[in-house]
Length: 330
Image 1: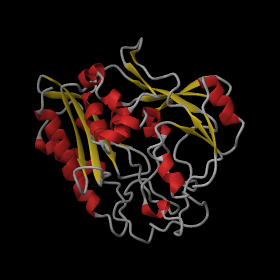
Image 2: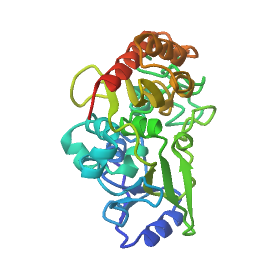
Image 3: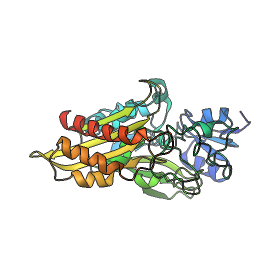
């Protein structure tokens, strides 16, 4: 690990100032991803600015009827908060499927959004990786790419986003509240927060230099009765998804009145299935309709040499998630 300066500001304003004053400064929340990357010499910050103990640790109801999740609150306390368990059980289910209890106790909500890919070429500094070293090439493009993207990838990068929490947030159409170094705030739609690789794969998100996530805004509660998060992985604990699905249904008189659907581990960002959602609205929750929605979801998939299995796996996962969401009652 390379030397760095550790800064523990007492206020958000001081943290913003510290970030603006250094080109290679990183905010430090729980450190469950960043510290590993530093140990592997992938991330090389000159300054670490500790923010986990600062403000924005509350979960509060908003004027619009939704909830605001403080960015500095840890994942465990968020997932197990009584209001989140009651009104957003899809989010709770996704969050509790991630990593281990110990990591969830440390990881912050804001930090979860900023997780970096687990692509082995990104972590192995002897291998080419445009995300880690722009212009060096993408080792996974023609290499071992069984766990890589089938949507939205480019010749520069085929990595996937590793988060479970983010898949549920994309399905629920959350928003991200950030504060800029000058103290002003802006709101980013969750589906616009992460970006596709294009020719800038080193940039995972749409945050500007020095911006700090302060909260995640959830819309008014929906899908609290019929929901399911399915995570398919190689082992049942401490493993990232091969494919995941966040599904929520609103039903009235035997018809689907609203639907939330997103895929994880298939793209550089959580992949919201807008066309499938549109198809399912005002239809009956039948196996045939769920199967057609899955076909629609996968029609634009572009598999790599070793990950074509994700297409069929994704279809079956979508049908299973929708079926489980329909059949369950909170």
